[in-house]
Length: 155
Image (cartoon, rainbow, N blue to C red; front, side, top):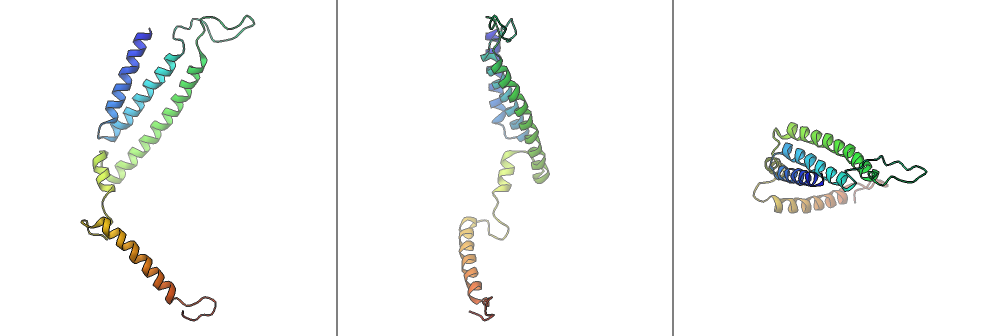
């Protein structure tokens, strides 16, 4: 039984990583879910799989073949957190579709890295630095020419 579970864990993790390397965001989200299920199965298998007795402690002590309840509790918590992550990722995916009409990572990255509309495309990096310096100088000039609030006189 442990061999089958180990192979299943390996296959789930491999499929999850393969799906996460895709350009489509839907496959990335599904890859995270499959990878999470593989990890959950690995944690669950770290407890005893052939637990023939419940993990209850009686006056005589714990049964010898009892399953370990800690990995079961961890996996249950991970399932709830994984579902919340899945719903959040689907919401982000939906919003990405609404904003960009596309769910491919390269196209969304290209849109996100476009220069600001008021800058030329060739000198976007240099323009941003120069514009910040101009804004600092114009702010100083406005502050120097503004009337003093206490006296009402210009400086």
